[in-house]
Length: 185
Image (cartoon, rainbow, N blue to C red):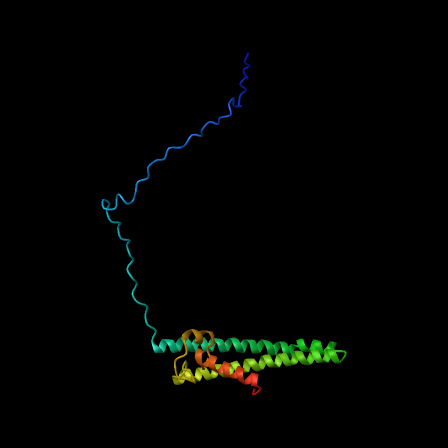
């Protein structure tokens, strides 16, 4: 007597697995077949080029540069005024009033030295700006004092009182560095 196993839902009777259904592949149209039969792609429309930017005249350039120099000069004068008024109002006087020993006095001296160095730096910048304005009026502004080439507009916008082009300034800095190493400076 052969015993038959009862079928349970969800279980397989035999050890054979059923093959999974495979999706039918749909043919993809080949681009190569239709190369000769299609119309060429339309060319993209190019917007008309705008008229060339108006070239800045020498007079307009000088006027723009003079405004830049004068604006920078005003900024420095404003900083000097603020630094001087803070000094006079007594920010350093507070340090003097609280100084009790030599350590405190050295801090007071250091603070005054820093303030004076800051003012001295502003004075030097003002002198350089005044010199740049003078050169602009003479027509020699923006010309390197070493090689005679024009200083780039980009450099003048960043450092309006530059007197050397980038190449000459780098050469000078290398020479100064070598002299420092040798102890000449």
